[in-house]
Amino acid sequence: MENLIEEILKQIGEDPSREGLVKTPNRVKKAYDFLTSGYKADLNQIVNGAIFEENTTGMVLVRDIEMYSLCEHHLLPFYGRAHVAYIPNKKIIGISKIPRIVDVFARRLQVQERLTDQIAQAIQETLDPLGVGVVIKAKHLCMMMRGVEKQNSELFTSSLLGLFKTDPTTRSEFLDLIRTGSH
Image 1 (cartoon, rainbow, N blue to C red):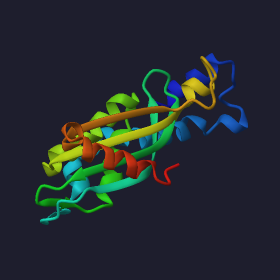
Image 2: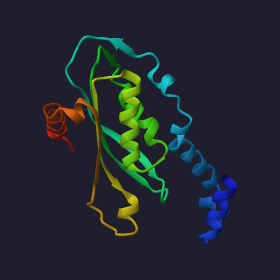
Image 3: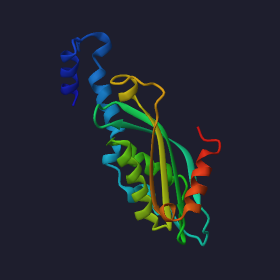
């Protein structure tokens, strides 16, 4: 990868041997290794058995999870907040695992629509809850820095499964909770 980054530097008119750029190919490689680490992540290892029997039936919501990803069309960042909720079906998950699940899928080349669905499906498959709701609000640098250059536009996506899709009361509770005090 470092040779390819060096070639990109040449193609854009830079001198890869310039002092400030000498280590850039290695730094870029390390950055991409981290930013795409979701491809190598194992969901079972991430969850690590942190699923517990519990008879609670109330909604579980982790709101305002910071999320950073790379747009697969331009390899530019998009970033925002994910809100993830589920209705337990006799099982709950350690709450720190939910942001980790978000990171597994965000650390891949993505479109926000697919990212939202992948998070919802992972929660569904891991817990078999009565319902899952995921909403992501993000800003896309591919729209802000180039193209239409709209700095204040945000993209909202949602994925609703089970009771979040079929029960208007559950859906309303979820949407009300993520609106209250949310950034």
